[in-house]
Length: 290
Ligand SMILES: [Fe+2]
View 1 (cartoon, protein in one colour):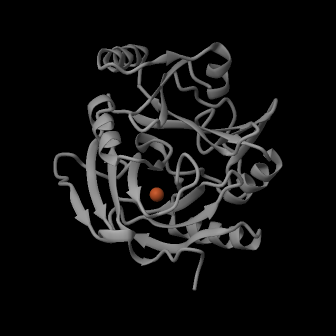
View 2 (cartoon, rainbow, N blue to C red; view 1 turned 60 degrees about the vertical axis):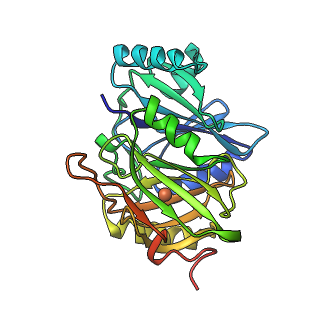
């Protein structure tokens, strides 16, 4: 069974700022001891923001699909020499899963494999996103990670997570050199992407992405983010490879959130990996609209 991005964990110094941020974006917000728990859809949990002395990405979790597939995936990782540590009951409760296990890829990108992803017991509730975010078979979104050696993370994702290459982007050589790989595990154009090069990223991830049902949702979120004074990382625009119409804003923990709609869905029977020399076909100005 193909993997789906099920959840993501964040370390945060300022839960109040995250609460405000989440309400502007339109997440369903639940409170816990020293944590905020966000829903995007009918699943009990998608984003876990835990109080910490740090502001950073903590982990993401792949839905294995079943307890058998979970056990098989752990066996495969261990057989390949990857250290895997099973999580405890507290961690499983916080993630709203039956069980989970953590590992890192060759660049130290921390990930988890999980099973028994719980459905929520109450309806999704959000002032701005009445029908929730676009998830389903594509998982909750995607994550972009800056790494020292993107080929090592690419090889790991292909070998152990059954990832397939969606496309590569090469932004030229010299001082501005940036090379990126986009990897899919399901119909979503990419669940994870890795890059090395000139684009700055001071946190463990560059950004994570959530997808809305309509382009209008993206535009309205853009207006709300601007009205709330949340810094824009990249103005509204459209990506060259996955065709996602999106903008990026700065989360309270320093990495960015991309809010987008209209991303390509991949059918492996007909897909062939592409190569691009730009990330966007229009818009997407760094530092906001100019
Ligand atoms: Fe993205």
